[in-house]
Structures are given as structure tokens and as C-alpha cells.
Image (cartoon, rainbow, N blue to C red; front, side, top):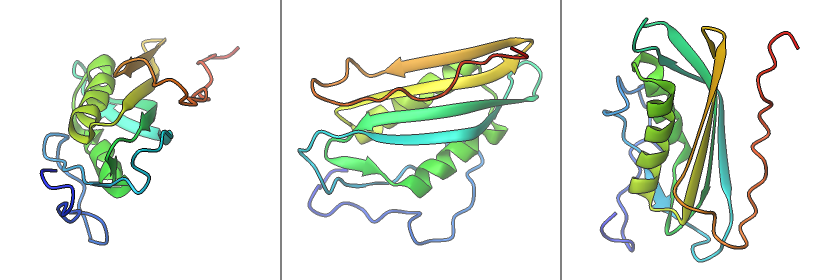
Length: 155
């Protein structure tokens, strides 16, 4: 966003939008933060996230939790939903997918802080949980536990 006084209109908000064919084709919309200057946390949870295994081409499933402390902009939730949905036909290892989502959001939105947890369901009997954060959370920011129970199998 080059001009904070006249940001571009969101591409998806209030429009019919198709699911992007790939994460690279997905456009994330950002809007001005109505509480810029206030330290607060935003959490998005995608409990039915899907991507494809790059080895087998079979679907992999995860519960993705994204936490961020906004700066001057916030991500528009419909565009985020379409972006996350675009991974359904994307092959990627759990680590690359989780960290890539976090880094793209951080690079484009420029929040004060961002953290992401990818809680992947077992593949080959091993659940894989992946975590990334931009830096230590700002002092005074309340970051509740993400609330995703560890995988227990038959336990």
C-alpha cells in the first residue's frame, strides 16, 4: 500500500470471488487498521486446512492458527480465506507451507508481530506441528494459548 490515505479498494470484499488456482495467484487484500497505534491481537483459525503431499499427491490436513498484532493495516478475512483455500491443489511439505503462509502475511501486511501454528494431522503415523513467529511478541501483548490439543491417537 503506497498511499495510506487512499488505499486501493479490496478486490474481494463485496464481490463474487473464485478460489485461486494456486497460492501464488492468490491476492491478499489489506485495509486500514481502524485501531492503528493500539496494541491488540487478531487470531484466525482454519481448522480444515488442506494441501497436497509433494511426494504422494495425497491430501494433507491441518489446523492452522494465525495470530498477529496489526500495524497500519489488517488483512481482509475473505481474501485470507481464499488464499488459504488455494492450497488445496498445492504440493508442499508441512514446514514450507506453514512458514510460507506466515512469512507472506508478515512481508505484505507489515504487522507489529505475527505468529503461526500449523497442527498437521498424522502422515505415516507421525503428526507434525510447525511454528513460526516474526520475532518475540511486543511487550504487553496478550497472546493466549492457541488451544489446539496435541495429537493423542487412541490415547
